[in-house]
Length: 376
Image 1 (cartoon, rainbow, N blue to C red):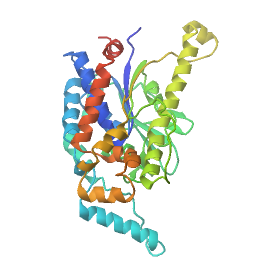
Image 2 (tube, rainbow, N blue to C red):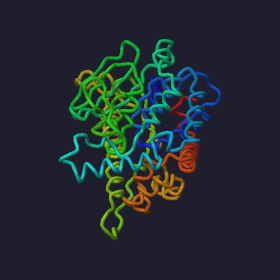
Image 3 (spheres, rainbow, N blue to C red):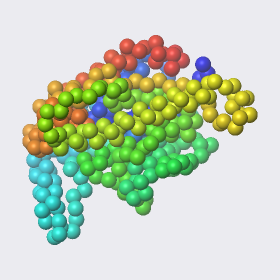
Image 4 (cartoon, rainbow, N blue to C red):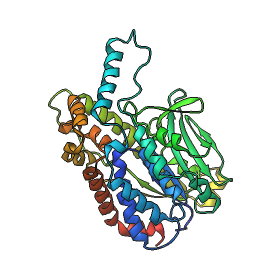
């Protein structure tokens, strides 16, 4: 196996992204005290985009970056991500009630269910994003990208910063745009539909990058990756059909929708990449060139949760602030079948720490595979 350029792909999932930090902590341990950055290409979507940007800022020392992420996620509270106090939730409820009952008289419709202004403050306080171009200039980082979905165009945009030789790209309904990554890009990629407000970048409003993202692994390949480590935010294996006793609650429908956005495209893209690897691997580089097949095998390792994250969220539902629990109970999120939605917004230490522990355990259980991928 050749070394090539290694890419890290971090998928979306709100509070579920704590699992990624557990995986990264295990990778840090497996690498030992080796200096530098094992992933010169970093690609993230939704909360994974924020994690990727943090690693890019600390690309000169991967161990320091992982320790910083672990410290933040281990101590997370919802009020660091969105306003969960009674006054804010009552104001939001009043705006939605007015829009639904007096829509003819209300000129401005509500933008989201939750106000994520605290997240902007948190990112500003802990991340100096000017460190990204510095890391690229100093050779610690080849490229970093975050994806967002345009509400007007319907296109999936990958905003990237990289070494000069990386070219922008355009494919059907998706394109790569070179830019300097800023806070607006991170808020846009993590703007879960309906839950958090869209963000205006240049002339368009953008939402969570997992929407309309048909090929979540492709940005890493466009940016020059030869091998890719993907950290998922949910189980990729099928669970099988379960008996439904009653009509699904709003929370259950919303959770199903979010899981479709965050999980399904990754499974399909991994299957597509597997088929391409089989095709490319059956021919020598010379044969592929002679046949006009410009494909190359991509070494891929996928680490995803071994347990259902919604079940873990259900065990920690009571750690949410009382006012937020009251609101979520009204839409069925505090019941077992609504815990999928809960798992995306439960930014509280008992839940995030449980996910970090699971990510660490899952990765250490595959230590040999990870070490082989890292060439250590």
